[in-house]
Image (cartoon, rainbow, N blue to C red; front, top):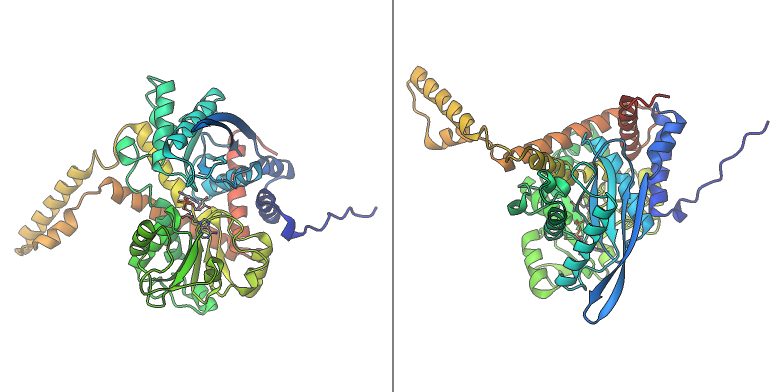
Length: 479
Ligand code: NAD
């Protein structure tokens, strides 16, 4: 009997969600999951598409919105909400699936989900954004698509803590007396039951990850790089939440931002750009172009093609395709955005020996700290509140004993260094750093231990699928 040949896939034609499925299929043979279970893990469990009317001045407009819950193997499901004119069902499905694999990689006990509203956040007045956000939340409540134990949204492209506060307020209004209600959404302002460090968490996670990636001498040697982030020349695409905080934190490790690309243009300076100053310039002039001391690129996409050590796409999906991949000169690409490198581009880059650090790992800092916020909301107590003073007193006692035994007095700065008890932000950053280091270690080990896996993304997907498989087995679903 002749074997049925599977049709050859043209990677260039894949939609975003098909790309995620392609990566999944590529990793599947490296897992120990049976085929039926693989199909279940890959499938999107629930898709809710909604249309609702909103008043724009004297006009009524129909708003298209989505919430997709990709996997219920762990509850609640979790994932951001995106406001963009590009939003469609395929995009939200892809992003929801990535959330499932991402949560598994960093051992965050959630299934993946994502939401999207097809609007331009820039061209929509704040009162209309608020009306749309409230109506969207109400629609989710009506269908049981939101709740601390059901599905917990967070910020994503085009949204931030303001929208999360509106979601929480709407939820609490509709569910009075729900003592855990604040945990219905994460990424809230700190004053509204949020957590310190969530705003910058994704960017900080990207930097912790890169610091770890660059710490392996043999990996760096293969790329012709030295270890550590100090001195690395970095290009960032997108100066929004993720891109800005990544840029701002990575310079604290001694890296240099030599170019920044935004939607309206890109700038370059070999001396290094100060992200805070560029952001201020953008807020004042409405553009990043003509930043003092920097050169403008002709086209914003040109910035991605300059020679650099680390390229950080932090804007949107499908930014590096088969068209510009051959021209990319970066040694490392850190996928801070979701899906910025298409499968066709990844093939080209892998052949060129570029190290791609996949989105499902490197941008997982946001969901990790969202998990901490959710835990804080459910426990109703700020991290560090119970132990900070106790730790400080114990450490003070220790210094007193050492001083008594040695007959020497510690200086004020030495004492301060030792007795600092952990605040919430210290614990959040410590938990985030540990998570990013451990997850990279696991992915790298998996990659190194397999002779047939060719890239870190396949290793990350395979590792993630194995972990999800274990959750299904724990629920009693055996092959
Ligand atoms: P954001 O809306 O805060 O910022 C995105 C920025 O990208 C904006 O400044 C926008 O002007 C810019 N941009 C848009 N198109 C561009 C282009 N063609 N070239 C250059 N810049 C462009 O969004 P964000 O929250 O920073 O999200 C960015 C990416 O990171 C998305 O893919 C998102 O899914 C992913 N992500 C976000 C989080 C989070 O916590 N916010 C977590 C994980 C992943």
